[in-house]
Length: 112
Length: 282
Image (cartoon, each protein chain N blue to C red):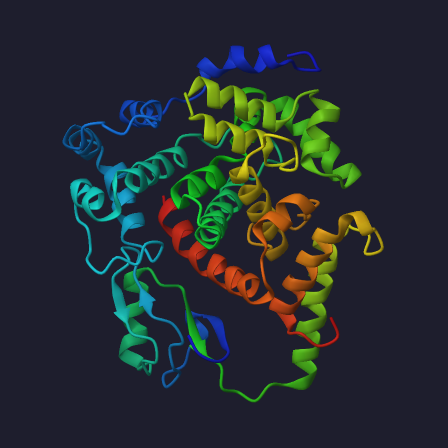
């Protein structure tokens, strides 16, 4: 896995897009290697293997408005998950440490 | 059943719970004996085709990164060892054991999503801490099993727990204590007794909400942190999910660096998806 990727439902995947992860079927057999360029024919066969969505390489230039919105949504969700934790409660520092790490994992390090 | 419930109420209802396949019970009972005859075991498990198929798919998943594909239980034992195979068989059978009972509001699939993710995370944490990874996986998978005991034995009463929890936006553990007078930790211990879990597993189930308690054991710390990480990563996708308080004792004991943590999160997400696909398949 390299760079950024996105999970798309099969209907939104276009020929020419690049697989970001190895594609496995339900038995764990490799159907396609990471980095494979998807063709129309490959996509037609996916439903037969029970595949509903794919991880493809995301090479579209990031849309700043959308990125900011996604970032806000991530931060809001983390805040909701940690709603029972008071950041000023020193006894609860381990929960805050976990929160900081998950925030870094989801939206990167700045402004944490 | 009148509330509050007692430990005895839970124990008295255990016999009505679905039982595991005989071979799995035998495996659980033999967990502290090393010399169980492997060929006998392989033969017995192979009679159950669905169980064999699930076990082999787990063995061939990236959880173990085997270079060769195993196609029989015997082979799995050769490549993964007896302990790992036994734990996979347990995982494959337990996840299919409790039917979706009529308990309004209880999300069966969210329960297993959380348990499977905790199992995956606990296994990775154990590797980092050089602890037995198979124990960690199984303990992670079964840490909340008491909740299923309560839901299966007392579905109407447990529906009240869920209603209470939603009304008060509190932790499930507190809602259980307030409504039932007994919680899933105690119910889990009753089942662990009933199913003859090993002492290590019992300690982990007992201590996963309070790993700082003297005698809780390191496995309880691993499961506790894995549980919190999985809540924080939102893997069960429960809209009103909330992260429990992380025990400073357990957090310190695992000594996770920033780099290790980020790696742990990524690996947990990836493995979770893969295992969930095998274990939750119809």
